[in-house]
Amino acid sequence: MRNKQIERQILDRYTPIKITDYAIKKANVISKRMCELAGESLEVSFCLLDDDPSAEDMLIGDVYISQDQRVTPAYCDVSGSGGIRSMRDIKYNLKKRIVGWGHSHANFDVFYSGTDDATILNRASKWKVKKEVDCLESILEDVGVLEENGSRVLRLDLEGRSVVLKMDMFRDHSDEYNLRGLDVLGSKKRDVGVFYGMTFNALGADPYCVLAYTSEDGGFFVKGVEHKVVENSEREVDVKEVDRQLKERVINLREIYEKESRIFERYKELQSGCEEDMIALMSGGDLDSLNELVDKIDEMSSIYRSDGDFGSEMTEMRIKLAEKLEGSLERIRTVNLELEDESLTEKVKNRLFSRGVDSKIGNLLQYVEGVKDGR
Image (cartoon, one colour):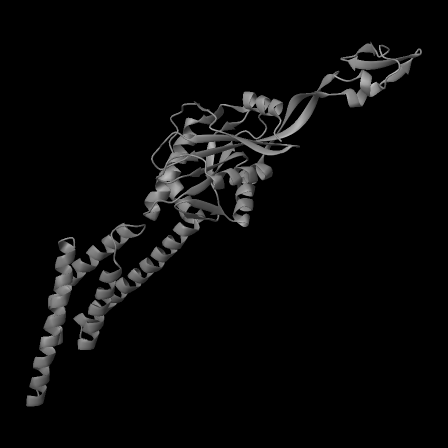
């Protein structure tokens, strides 16, 4: 059962949630870039960090993309090892402390779902910031009734001053009877843990905020608390670094990036092969060699894409290859049609070969024209 007295003190001390404008901007950029890089609406999980681990107050000054997470349009799951690596990186390398859990709702509204409720309690139990609160509690059990000078008394020590309450009004009744309706309250320190939760989205909406806390009574949270933006600085978010971290730490994006890397490596391999084939064909070669060149260019065309991480590099390579081809095709055609006219049989072969060369040269010319036209 939640202790309202403890909850009130925690809310008074640690809300509204203080967060810098830089941390909010970064959380919004992370949420937006996650969707843009993936090409679909996906959540993403991150830690809310305090730049000063020793400060009594809690101030969210930075945001850390959690490692090794797999995400969907409605869920973000950080692996156990990913959570440990994130915590160590934050504590030992960044020298900061985790004060909350943040996540994006992609292109949807900001709120707290049932899954989010369970997650914030789980995170709070592990990463809570330890605090103390003063709690007024009954101290009758610690005092008890004493016999003093023939009388029963209740002796208290209040801030160094001894106070005695005589209990002789009902001598023939028990101590429990005499103490009924009487309570003596004293201030006691109680250990608690405090943890923040914030939900952002890719649309830049104001975050939805939650305060979670733990005590000896259990774990609890209060939804819809206020936040306050402080430290309006001119510090800008490094979008390229955000992209790099997303591709490295979000499994979905890492898989896409690794696939694109393999395609790009194949594209470079084909480009190099085409250049070698052109050199060989300009000094001789045969129809099979010309076919191989055409096949390579056909494969390059099938895997080429102008967007993505390697789009600009692939486009540049594509244009350079087309320029080299345009300057080489006439020489390739001439060399490959210089055949000896030894017999009628050879003449027939030569005509057939000539048609094959012209056909393949035509394919290559279409490729060159397509590149020049931006197709």
